[in-house]
Length: 173
Image (cartoon, rainbow, N blue to C red; front, side, top):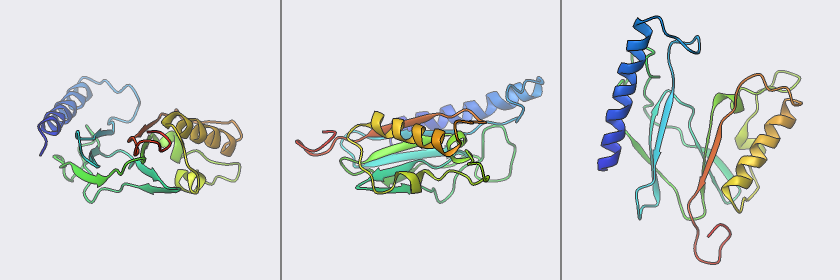
């Protein structure tokens, strides 16, 4: 395991203890009593991304017109949820080839509904497209969700895209 991933694991464990401590004091800023977390690391020189999830939505790998959710085999439970499950989830590695983007979102994206109540699916909306820069990917997704909902967003939405540089001379290199 990479040294910084171990540090991240310790931080996640401290986060769990902090959430539980504040719950005991009656603090619940969001009315839910728990929070999700997703840590992502691209080790130098690696063509992989290492993910550690505590109940968070899977990120997407966006490459060559394909959009694939990176679903972990054993995601951890949300911080402070007190649910049975792998409270000490281990990191898991996924391919992140040159020119590919890692797209991270919150549930404000995946739970956005159209006027018929149908949820938005980023994989369907972004498939078949290419993006020269991460900002273009983010802007496209935000515009899609806004159009999907008719401009009526009912939840906050956070979107982050990180692109691994491609070979020299390629878009985004």
